[in-house]
Length: 137
Image (cartoon, rainbow, N blue to C red; front, side, top):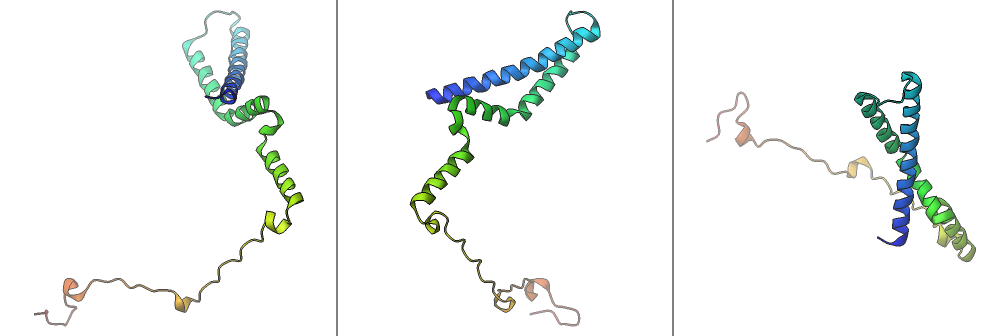
């Protein structure tokens, strides 16, 4: 893994650690205030808070990734801004028609009479004779 990838992974890990610490810390503080002591919380409570932390990290994965990219890569991490700047540079050096060519015209629609039509059916030898017809010999 290159240096940038390693720094991105470290930044993501640090952000996730902060989110988990805030949720676990809030839960510990709430438990101490409700229970009146700082002893060991019940197993069900610990499991419940762990599920909440996992859900929070899942929901915040994209914002955390963007924040980590912004911290590691700086302003250039915003892909939209980079593409907008590139388009502006291209528009300044090339005619607009070459930067953003005209959209292609929609294909002409064929009239219904020219559309292929298919008919499916069983041959009469397999189907057998219809009513009032003698069997085939």
